[in-house]
Length: 242
Image (cartoon, rainbow, N blue to C red; front, side, top):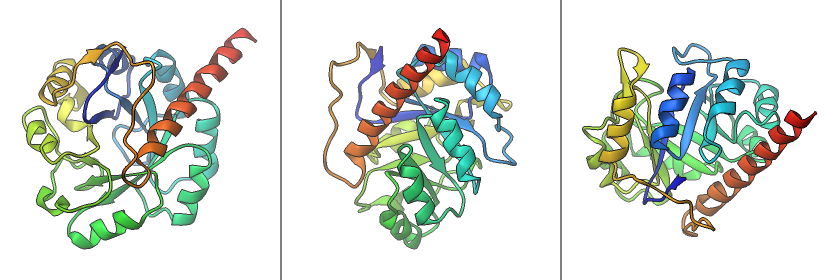
C-alpha cells in the first residue's frame, strides 16, 4: 500500500522497532535514520540495517548526515540500508555531486533570511530541505518562502496542530521529528494525527508513479529514489538466499 497525495511526508529520527512498526501502520513516504554525530536520535549502521529490514519496502529510507565521511555514506547506500542521502553540514557542492552518483541527495538549509534561500536555490542537490535548525523543533518565518521557485521539503517545528498551515504553503514535502514525539520518544498517536491533519490517506499503490516535471530535481528525485529502493530490495533478497 502506498499513500498518494499532494505532499510527501518524512518521519525522521526512527530509532526502535516500535518506531518502525508505528510508521508502517500510517505509511509516510520516507523514514529518516539519523547518523549525525551529536544527535540524540543517532543510531549506528547495525541498528539501521535491522530497522530497515522491518520497514515497509515502499517507504524510502533516508540517511541523515552532518559533515561525515563520504565513504561511510557510500557503504550504507551500497549495503541497501538507505535509499537517499540527507546532508545537514557544510558539505561542498563537489561532495554533493559525488554523492548524487550513489543516490538522490537532499540538502538542508537553515533559513534565517532570503539570502539563505538564494543558497538553497543554487545547490545541485536533487531536493532541498528548508529548516529552522537541525533538530531544534522550531519553525522559521515561513513567509520567506513566498516566491521560492524550486520544490522543497519544509522542516522545523511541524506538529499535528500546525501542519495544515504548513500544507497551505504547498511544499513538495514535510519533514517531522519532534512533532511526533512525547517526552523524546516517537508517539504512534501523534504519527497518525500528523498524517490525518496533513490530509494523507492510504490507498493501493498506482501501477506507475506520476511525477511532475517542473522544478529542478523534482522528477529525478522520485524516479531515482524509487530505482535505488528497488535495487536495494533486490540486493537484500539475493543476500538472504546465500
